[in-house]
Image 1 (tube, rainbow, N blue to C red):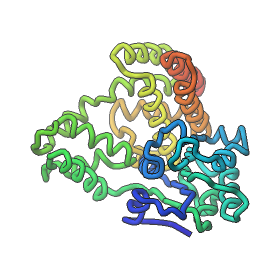
Image 2 (cartoon, rainbow, N blue to C red):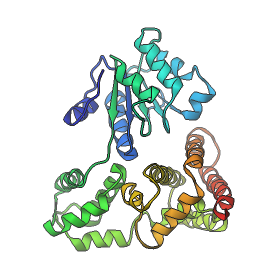
Image 3 (cartoon, helix red, strand yellow):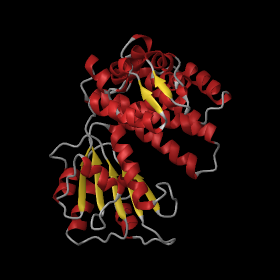
Amino acid sequence: MVKPSGGSVDRLLKSPPPDLRVFVIFGPDSGLVRERAQALSRSIAGDPDDPFNVTRFTDEDIKADAAALADAMAAMSLMGGERLVRVRLSGDSAPVARWISEFEAGEMPAEGRLVVEAGNLTKASKLRKAAEDGKKSAAIACYEDNARDLIAIAEESFKTAGLALAADARHTLAGILEGDRELARSEIEKLILYKGFDGGEITLEDIAAISTESADAALDKVIDAALCGEIQEADLQYRRALESGTSPVAIVRALQRKIDQIERYHQLGGDQGALARSGAPRFGPPAQRFQAAARAWSRARIARAREIAFETERAIKRSGSPAEALAGETLLRLARAASPARAR
């Protein structure tokens, strides 16, 4: 049974023990789940996107082919180096849990290593239980950072960039960073880019400046229109984003992040407090747009939206079809699906 916590998690991510073959990373902080999965994958395979040594699966892949995971884990590397299988799930998965149990019992071979990203698994989850009970598996929980943790991450990043955080700006920045780890890192990176790498102090004025004019504003217009069911507006904003040089892949990934945020908002109760804890906008028109999208995409429907977004990114990478067409069709598909839901 391996359930690392605190500093032992960072050590495991940097140097995973050779006897551990399976890693289930789960919890309510989806940004931290992704960050840790990426760091661990990089430690195992070097390049977490290596098409020869890394195989990826989603919920739908596993459901469509029950033997796919076992086949991928049994395959040997043809190019040398460590084989890695990455599975991204929206929640519990009986097939993946079953494979882990059979592997632990010596009934399944594992030539490579398995990294599973999951949602907020309960103690009764089959997947979590299989990882926690195994001797060759690790269950890594990802819970929300508190304000002190996030400010520490920010100040470490600023120090690396030759910057410092003004004392009177710490409280304001803590409020902005509150919520998902991935969203917090995005805000930190914006501040560093805004200040540059020439040294200096990050002030309240700097924080206000990046909050007022976000680099993600154009992406937000596209994604919000699609998820709110505004078909013509989504098409218009998508064309404008492409004309400004935004890549279709960046738009699809922004769509995935917003979908994750909406799901997390629902998981946290779907109330005013959930806005802050999910990292969603809390005031004014941005908050109203987010809540409108959340009403159109209930907790039951948002999982399907995620599958569509993942399918689109996979199709962009694998097919010869233009990325612009694939991403555009996905946005309009979601906008059409949200339109009648919004009307209700």
